Length: 339
Image (cartoon, rainbow, N blue to C red; front, side):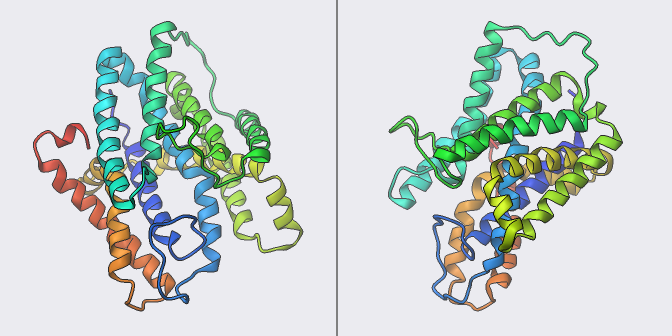
């Protein structure tokens, strides 16, 4: 299986973005966060724009990249080995980190590990479907086009729009009662569709077939839509985006995701020891960063740096610490099979 360096490097970028996203949540309207600054002056009212743009695409892109590797992994390993490795690679971190978070919070809670759990469920469902149906893509010559991406994002957006009529954004549910499978319905359709499109992209070789024109135009559209969120500040434009946000966000997700995939394909094939090292630690860094971050936020609570200063300081320190701790853990025999 050929190593796609640009996808490794893109995952590093997304992991760092997740860490900085979480670093800012204590200093803005970040929802139910495990730490709140004791100084009320440590607040960044503007950072909700940053949260909104990130939430629109970064987890969906994670699911797309994960879905891209699933068919190749299943074909190479077979059903039994595929399921076993997913249970080890995803299930063990979920149990350990979910258990630790539950103990520390005093309630059943898995926090950011919802992504790992959902990915495990998606992979197991894929394995079940593959046991029933054999894929047959033949010699399909399709490739991503702007019209195709527009149709895909509109389907996602219309579905998301209607879901949000009954379950608004940031509303989390546990649909199976005591079984800890938390999900945010407002975004879950996006995650499912992006995972599926990742599988199709792998089967049909879409990432390699995507033309420079399609990739560049997709990135441009995605960046303009992201800019549109940063320009929201009351008025008619804000009201328009808010009214149709399920559709707007889906357009942003699809176009910026495929734009970034094209950008990294063309410019992100870095292959130095540093980038290979970062790629090897990225998965573990995602898993361990939250505990380290909240601990550091409490530790520096009484130190004045300003809200932005703390946001940047904590984001930078925890990025380094998370990647470093993962490296140390992976030295332990057997841990590389998990992290």
